[in-house]
Image (cartoon, rainbow, N blue to C red; front, side, top):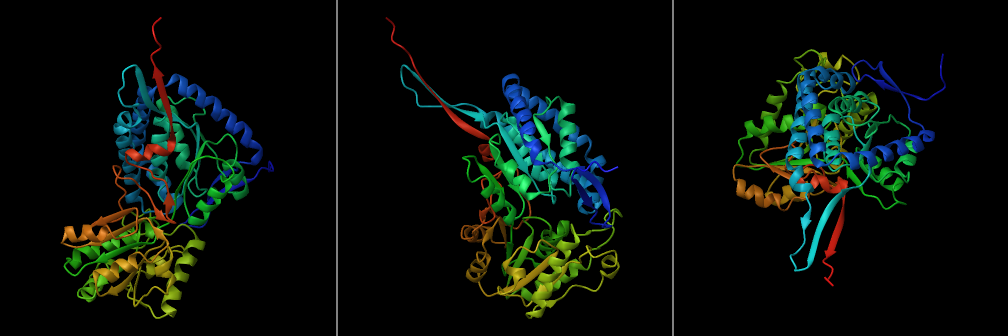
Length: 470
C-alpha cells in the first residue's frame, strides 16, 4: 500500500529499468534536519579536537579502501562506467583523503601575529558549522571526498545531497564513518530531486555553507537560492576543455592520451577533453592516429570486464550528445568514427559510440558548449597564437592541455590560457596537491590542495594584551 510519500527512483543507464528507490526529502523535514545537525556540530566541536578528528578520518579511509572492490559494482550499476575502472575511483578518493589528512595539521594550526612585547596575537581557523554538500553522479566518490574530508577535519557537521542517480554512495560513506566512530548526525544524508525543496534547504538559516558540483544552470540556481544570506557558496561547474597538439609532438603517443582524455567515462567528466586543436604540420598524421586508437576501443556491457565504454547516464543525455553531433554534421563536419561499434550501439539508446569529428569550427555547438559525451572534435590551426585564441574562446575554463616536446614553450603558452588548471603533456587529472578550481563559468572557490580547507573555516583573531601589574 502506498504511503503517499514522494519517492525518488533511480533508473539504470544500462537497462532503463528502476534499480533503487528512496523516500524523497520534503520541506517539512528541514527544521528537524537542521536542528539535529546543530546539536551534533556543537557536540563534535566540544568533544573532538583535531587529533581526534584526524584519527577518525584515518580509520574511515582505511575502512573505505577495504570496501573498494565490493562497492565498485554500485558505480557500474548506477552510472554505467565499466566495472574494471570503478574500484580505482574509490581508491583514488582514499588517496585524496589521505593527502588532505596529511596536510591538515599544518593547514589548520593557529597562525601567529607579529611579535610585540606585552602582546599575544594569533589567527585561529574555526569551523563554519553546517555544510550542505550537493554533488554530481559522474565521479561521486571523488567529488564527495573533496568536501567531506576537509570539512570534517575542520570540525564541521555535514548534510550530503547526492544526485538521485547515485543514492548509495553517500550512504556508503556514512556507514564507513559511523563504523569508524563518528557521532550520530555529524553527517546526514538527504535524497532530494525537487528543485524547490532544495532551494528551501539552501536558503535555510541553519545552513552555514554550500558546496555544489554539477551543471552551470544548477550552480546558478544554488547561488541564487543562497543570495539573501551571507554564506560562502563553492561552485564546481562545467567544462569545455581544450587540447592543443604542437607540431613537434609524437602524434601516436599524443593520440592515445587524447582519446583517453576525451572518452574515458564516456566523456562524462567535467575535465574531459572536448576540443582538440592540431597544428597543420601534423594534423593529418594525428587524425589518422586517433582513428587507429579508437579502433581498439570496445563499446559494450559495462559488467563484461572487456568494455572500454559503457552507456551514458540517461536517454536524455544520449539524445543531447547525438544532437550536438548531428548539428555539426549538418553544418559541414565529417565523422571518421570506425564502423566497429554497431554491436555495442544495439544494446540501447544510451550506448553512444565514440565520435571523431573533423572539419569543425567555432560556429558549432560541439565546439562552443559542453557536450559531456564521448566526442573528439578536431580542428586544424596554423600557429600557437591561433591555438591559444581558440582555446580561450569559451565561457568555461576548468582545464586545458598543451602537448609538446618543448616543455618550456608549453609552460609559456599555459600562462596565456584561461583555465584553472593547464596541463602540459597530461590531461584529465585533478592532482590532490593542486587547487581544483574553475575560471569563468566553470566555478568559484576551490577544493583539494592546502587551499581546499579555506571554504570550510572562518578566521577568528585573538588579540591579547598583558595587563599592568599594580
